[in-house]
Length: 173
Image 1 (spheres, helix red, strand yellow):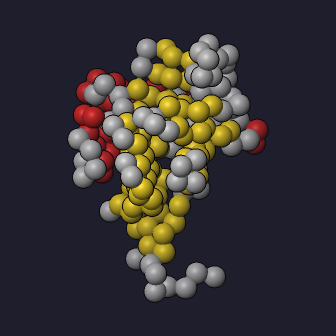
Image 2: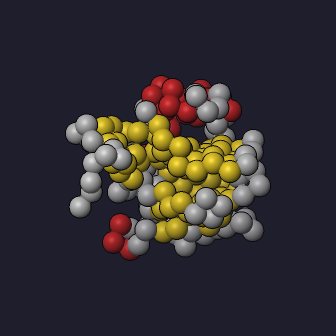
């Protein structure tokens, strides 16, 4: 199940449900952002079930057209999770590194093959016409952990705590 969070012109933000919350709603820690021809799947990075995520994005784009998998957790610690993505798609993996590092491009992003590392201070991730902004979570979680802000939709994607969608007829205290 997915929920459209924002749509304007050729910009679309979708929450992909991780699981139901006791029949009263859903919890989402995976998001799809489409901007023109660009696409980014935002995930925590702790679990990347290849077939499940391909199926989740397929109503919106052909899975082979996915350009970026953007991870909230450090990608260097979870390289094994990306093997199916790297073997079966042309996607680039974007995320932080636990050890941090120096940026080597004007945009503040460091590219190593199909991995794109974010500096500890965060950076803008280019899409088609717009950007996603990587915001560091804070020192308590360590280096390389991010939330992502979409300035156009004004949505903050937080894969750590996720987003909970309640059924409209149920009151939330």
